[in-house]
Image 1 (tube, rainbow, N blue to C red):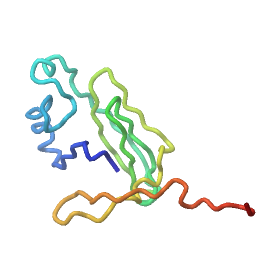
Image 2 (tube, rainbow, N blue to C red):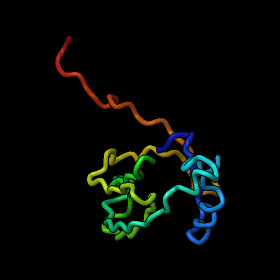
Image 3 (tube, helix red, strand yellow):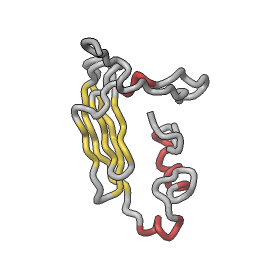
Length: 137
């Protein structure tokens, strides 16, 4: 689940660097913003490898917090070994949060958009939807 204002670009790893170099600092990627002058001073992206083991596709195993950019909930099949690589600007933090903040957030995605890797959005359930009152009033 993400803000509708967050641009999501699905690409192959072989094209990722070229897309970043071409669009960093411009409207398409949104972050980082600031144009060519700011990008000259923007720190280089530094990779960090993350190893996780899945606990099932209906529950996130961890969140990856990207300093000042948000977080990503990670899911995988039970006992599936994951090796992820995330990039953040040099000098900023990348944190793996275990347990995740919203472990079941992956269950509120909508139907797959045909021909893409994206999903339609679906309204999340109310936080009080399953509460039951006890006793009489």
